[in-house]
Image (cartoon, rainbow, N blue to C red; front, side, top):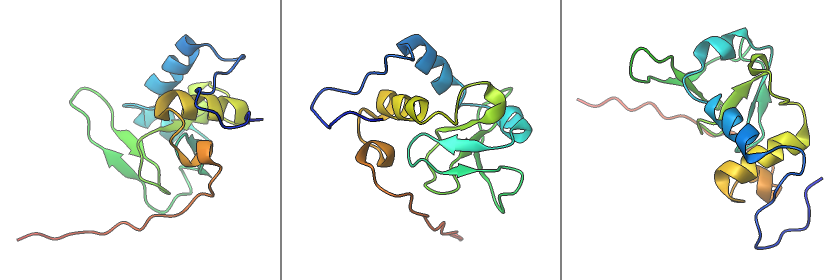
Length: 126
Protein backbone atom coordinates (compact mmCIF):
# COMPACT_ATOMS: atom_id res chain seq x y z
CA UNK A 1 0.00 0.00 0.00
CA UNK A 2 3.05 2.24 -0.29
CA UNK A 3 2.79 5.15 -2.73
CA UNK A 4 5.24 5.65 -5.57
CA UNK A 5 8.70 6.70 -4.34
CA UNK A 6 9.21 10.47 -4.36
CA UNK A 7 11.48 12.85 -2.50
CA UNK A 8 8.67 13.56 -0.05
CA UNK A 9 8.50 11.30 3.01
CA UNK A 10 5.62 8.86 3.27
CA UNK A 11 2.90 10.12 5.61
CA UNK A 12 0.19 7.80 6.84
CA UNK A 13 -3.35 9.12 6.93
CA UNK A 14 -4.30 6.54 9.58
CA UNK A 15 -1.53 7.03 12.14
CA UNK A 16 -0.67 10.40 13.64
CA UNK A 17 2.93 11.44 14.33
CA UNK A 18 2.14 11.32 18.07
CA UNK A 19 0.90 7.71 17.77
CA UNK A 20 4.01 6.72 15.80
CA UNK A 21 6.18 8.38 18.47
CA UNK A 22 4.47 6.23 21.14
CA UNK A 23 5.17 3.14 19.02
CA UNK A 24 8.80 4.20 18.72
CA UNK A 25 9.00 4.57 22.50
CA UNK A 26 7.69 0.98 22.78
CA UNK A 27 10.85 -0.32 21.06
CA UNK A 28 13.09 0.81 23.93
CA UNK A 29 13.70 -0.83 27.33
CA UNK A 30 10.92 -3.33 26.70
CA UNK A 31 12.09 -6.78 27.76
CA UNK A 32 8.98 -7.66 29.77
CA UNK A 33 6.71 -6.68 26.86
CA UNK A 34 8.79 -8.71 24.39
CA UNK A 35 8.75 -11.75 26.66
CA UNK A 36 4.94 -11.42 26.99
CA UNK A 37 4.50 -11.14 23.20
CA UNK A 38 3.42 -13.96 20.91
CA UNK A 39 5.27 -12.37 18.02
CA UNK A 40 7.38 -9.33 17.16
CA UNK A 41 8.28 -7.30 14.09
CA UNK A 42 11.31 -5.20 13.17
CA UNK A 43 10.53 -1.81 11.68
CA UNK A 44 13.81 -1.70 9.76
CA UNK A 45 13.97 -5.01 7.92
CA UNK A 46 10.40 -6.27 8.39
CA UNK A 47 11.42 -9.54 10.03
CA UNK A 48 8.56 -11.09 12.00
CA UNK A 49 9.37 -13.70 14.63
CA UNK A 50 8.20 -15.42 17.79
CA UNK A 51 10.52 -14.33 20.61
CA UNK A 52 9.86 -17.43 22.70
CA UNK A 53 10.90 -19.69 19.81
CA UNK A 54 13.95 -17.73 18.68
CA UNK A 55 17.19 -19.62 19.30
CA UNK A 56 19.17 -16.60 20.50
CA UNK A 57 18.05 -13.10 21.31
CA UNK A 58 20.51 -10.22 21.52
CA UNK A 59 19.72 -7.63 24.17
CA UNK A 60 21.12 -4.16 24.81
CA UNK A 61 21.63 -3.38 28.50
CA UNK A 62 20.12 -0.01 29.41
CA UNK A 63 20.91 2.06 32.47
CA UNK A 64 19.15 0.70 35.56
CA UNK A 65 16.35 0.62 36.43
CA UNK A 66 15.38 0.36 32.77
CA UNK A 67 14.78 -3.03 31.16
CA UNK A 68 16.90 -4.33 28.29
CA UNK A 69 16.17 -3.47 24.64
CA UNK A 70 15.94 -6.22 22.02
CA UNK A 71 17.90 -6.17 18.76
CA UNK A 72 16.31 -7.77 15.72
CA UNK A 73 17.60 -11.34 15.29
CA UNK A 74 17.70 -10.75 11.53
CA UNK A 75 19.35 -7.34 11.08
CA UNK A 76 20.53 -6.44 14.62
CA UNK A 77 18.80 -3.04 14.59
CA UNK A 78 17.08 -2.08 17.86
CA UNK A 79 13.62 -1.22 16.53
CA UNK A 80 11.63 -4.34 17.43
CA UNK A 81 8.12 -4.13 18.83
CA UNK A 82 6.08 -6.94 20.35
CA UNK A 83 2.44 -7.90 19.99
CA UNK A 84 1.90 -7.33 23.73
CA UNK A 85 2.58 -3.62 23.16
CA UNK A 86 -1.02 -3.24 21.86
CA UNK A 87 0.15 -1.58 18.64
CA UNK A 88 -1.16 -3.04 15.34
CA UNK A 89 2.10 -4.72 14.35
CA UNK A 90 0.33 -7.01 11.84
CA UNK A 91 -0.90 -4.02 9.82
CA UNK A 92 1.47 -3.43 6.86
CA UNK A 93 0.53 0.26 6.70
CA UNK A 94 1.46 0.69 10.36
CA UNK A 95 4.80 -1.07 9.87
CA UNK A 96 5.55 1.09 6.83
CA UNK A 97 4.50 4.29 8.62
CA UNK A 98 6.81 3.47 11.55
CA UNK A 99 9.68 2.60 9.24
CA UNK A 100 9.27 5.80 7.25
CA UNK A 101 8.91 7.94 10.39
CA UNK A 102 12.01 6.49 12.06
CA UNK A 103 14.31 5.92 9.13
CA UNK A 104 13.19 8.68 6.75
CA UNK A 105 12.71 6.34 3.79
CA UNK A 106 16.05 4.59 4.27
CA UNK A 107 15.19 1.07 5.35
CA UNK A 108 14.72 -2.35 3.81
CA UNK A 109 10.94 -1.93 4.17
CA UNK A 110 10.97 1.46 2.42
CA UNK A 111 13.20 0.12 -0.33
CA UNK A 112 11.08 -3.01 -0.79
CA UNK A 113 14.15 -5.20 -0.30
CA UNK A 114 13.88 -8.71 1.11
CA UNK A 115 14.88 -9.51 4.66
CA UNK A 116 18.48 -10.75 4.88
CA UNK A 117 19.92 -12.61 7.82
CA UNK A 118 23.06 -11.12 9.31
CA UNK A 119 25.67 -13.32 10.89
CA UNK A 120 26.91 -12.39 14.31
CA UNK A 121 30.62 -12.66 14.88
CA UNK A 122 31.84 -13.19 18.43
CA UNK A 123 35.18 -11.58 19.11
CA UNK A 124 37.38 -12.64 21.97
CA UNK A 125 39.91 -10.00 22.91
CA UNK A 126 42.87 -10.58 25.18
